[in-house]
Length: 452
Image 1: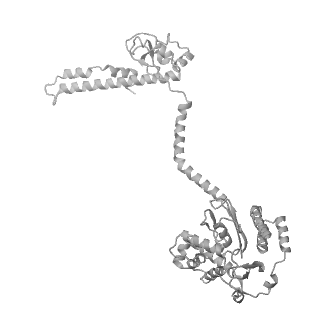
Image 2 (image 1 turned 135 degrees about the vertical axis):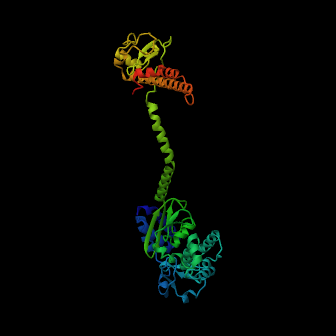
Image 3 (image 1 turned 90 degrees about the horizontal axis):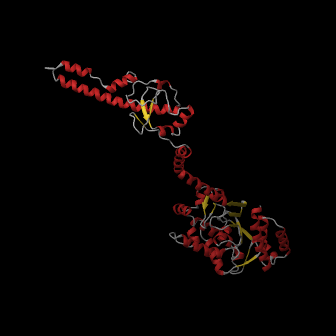
């Protein structure tokens, strides 16, 4: 895969370093890992050179008897170890490693291996040599110490590989708060309790180093590299453990597995945050949109123009008499203001009405609204018609009020004259009150409004 090319080049550089220092087995291991990640001509050429170098003691190691020892570990695989008879002959000699190479170890390293191997596979606190009430910092400190002491590149004692896997497994469980809580309650492997999460789970969880990874995808070597910040096997790379893209590679019994994640998850999280912010702002956006729509008519429309002022009595100011076209109400306006009105004046100008003679509207008689009726026959434009309807309404409303007041006054005068029982009533006077004419009521009758 092209995405593994950078890591393959790192492994190739480590292989050359080991080859130059004479560590042929380690050089072969990293060269093969480089080819499995991304095959290059340089890696193939280096592997040919490594295979051309004879390994010392290979024939002697071939005759060494071995026995198969099964021990459950973090990956659940079977490993082969030298027989106890050959390993017990020396306390600080060599042990057969990968490919039969000789690996040195000390008495202290062998003692650490024996102590870890003597624990049960689920005695995670005993494996790390910490108390059950220890905090996360103590667990990390214990793992750091044991991982450095048991790493296969540093410790060649028999069983060091298996002890290293046990330490890694214990750290993975105790450094995860959820798994540790399950383990404290049951005393069993939390992953086995949930049906083999380590090999089949596809759930996503945060690792103890920041960022995220898929459960069950961390091999002991990967865990070591993540904890100590890379180097060594170099199976995890990307932008670091702070949340950038992460690539994991596992060389377990199930084959070579890779997982790439990080950048896409961050993009999805960013998109979710933007949608959440948009939902929170939606009420404000809707309110702003309604306000804008309600203001559009005032922004782009023409401002309302007030109607010309008028009066029902002539004066120096209201010097032009007119008559409405509907019920013939006589009213007076200011000639300059009326014909200078932007709407009514323009309409009258189109109709040729200059105010000199308007079917009897130019008369200056103040004898009330009676007499002239020719104004009803004139054709009005829509603006003048609307204005004169306002004049009619104001005039008739005023007449209604005065008519009602007159009728109330007559009724009170009649009741006062009759008294309580009508004793001593001057009925002639009562009839005179009834015959009394109310001018406003008569005007309404003349206009035909009172009978409608």
